[in-house]
Every structure is written in C-alpha cells, then in structure tokens.
Image (cartoon, rainbow, N blue to C red; front, side):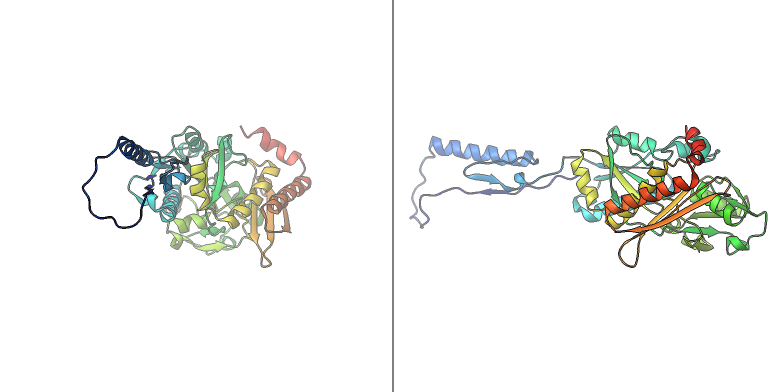
Length: 388
C-alpha cells in the first residue's frame, strides 16, 4: 500500500507578538542552534516513521504520527484460482478495494496471484472420488499462511467447514443470485426432457435432486470450468447441464441459460453465490481493509448455512443443500436438505429465527441435528469412512 503523507506543524514561542523595528540580525546563540537542530531531527523522524507510535516534543508536534497507520507494504497480494470465474471474482475484489481506498488505486498497489489447486489439476475424476477437503482452496490457503499472498478470494461453497489454524474469513461480498441455471439446446425445462436424456453435472447436490424428481433421466459427471462445460454441451456430449446462475452473471454469460430454476425445485449449495475473502489471523491492517467490503446480511446467512453443514459433518461425498434468507418480516428463514447419492432418500427441514449472527448459527445447528435424527447416524458413516 502506498504510505500516507504526514503533516508537520510547528509552534515556536516568541517573547513578544508586537511588530518590532528593523534591526541588524544578531548572531544565533548556541542554544538556538541546538533547538533548530533538534527541530530538524524530529521533522525528519516524522517523515521516516510512518507508524502508530506518537512523537512528542514541547515545541514540535507531528500530528499524523499519532494516527494508527497500516504496516508498510509495497503490494497487497490477492490469491485466487486461475479459472475465468475465479479471476472475475478476484478482479471484483480488487476493484472494490480500489474504490474504498484511493491509495490502493495506485499502480502496483494490488497484485493478482494465480494459484493452481488440486481441484484444478485433477479433471478426469468426480470430486467425490478425489476425496479430501478443500479441493479448490488448500493450496491458496497454504500460500496465505506462508505469507506469499495477503488475502485469499474463495467461492464460499468451496470453503471447508473448518478453516486452517491461523486463518480467518472476516469478509463476505454481497451475495449474488443463489439459483441454478438450466441450459439445454432442445428443451425449456428438466420436465420436458425425454426419458434417457443425459444431464451433465459434477455436483452431487444437483444430481440427487434431479434423480429424485426425474428418475427417468440420467446424470453423468461433468467437470471443467463454465466455458468448457458449455463447449461440451454444444458438442452434444450431454443433452443438458446445470450451472450456478451467479457464475454466469459474473462472467457476463447469463444469455447462455435456458431457464432459471426456483429454489423450491433445486435447493442451492451451502453458501452458493457468495464470495469469501480470507486473511491471516492477527493481520490487523488487512482485516481493516476487508471490514470495509463486508456485507453483513450475506455474512449472517452464510454463518447459518455453514453451521448447518458443520453439524452434519458434510463432506464432498454427502449431497447437502441449504439456504438461509431474510424473510418479509425481517427474520431468518432456513431450508435444508440431505440425500442419498442415488436420490432415493431425501430428507428436508425448514425453520425460522431472528436475523442475528447468534440466532443464525443456532438455527443452522438445530436444522442439522434434526436431519441427522431423520436420516440416522448410519446414513453418514459411509461418507466419513471414504472422505480421505
């Protein structure tokens, strides 16, 4: 970040404030010379020491030196994946920072650092088969904790329930549309697809909800970024696909969709449409930057949904969906879902609470406990045993 300019004020006492007749200059005494040298040294110190400590002197005050100034950094490094959507989200974060802090609009103040994750490297297997947690975040988080980047920009639906030690996630940008988009060149909806039609999707959540409502359809694994999936669709590798509407909007590709699915028909993933920005614990300067970007309503909703996910102890092998929204009364409405991978067994819940962080977390936890009771502990055992 660019350093701030300090302003120096001088207050030199005089023995008389009236106008004196012009006289010849008298030699400067040793005491006056010493005072001037002292003033010069303090003035120079104020220019160099752009820190939060105070510089005091009976006659000289460096006003800006008393302010809490950010730790000097040449560049704030923003870590992200390299997919077009991830980059769009990183650029969005960069632009918000520039708008909020004029000093960050200077050339070289912000830098985008592209980091390849495990999920980016392994494209020929379903995510559930790769196993582990943080498939799209771990390498970025490692770079953050190692000091190679200052902030990490994530799609919140990719963020593991429990963050690595030493990392915090204090900021959520305002949430985009949470709904899923149906894309098909031959039908206007899932219901209109003939039996045996092939739907491409890498999301277990989407797969189970499709199979539960339309068992006559077939769903196959469909990995890759938005552009590659649309290309495969045009090449007729599959008959249709589903993508997050938020991603299409951020890529300015909303014109590619056929229909937007209502959340009653396709409950979204936990934290879908939300962007999270992480930093190191104890990095107060970066936390102050991120605080100005945080959208509190989004953060409260995400806290509820992630509390639900954490209570279920969900993994990439567990089809889970959840959505927290502010209702017409200003309170919180939550809906959650967990299902078997074949879509035959689907358990749902809904509940309401007040729109506060504390109540949001409690609502998510209670919803998770309810579904665990409905499904039974055995329902989740196989997933836990095959996570790693």
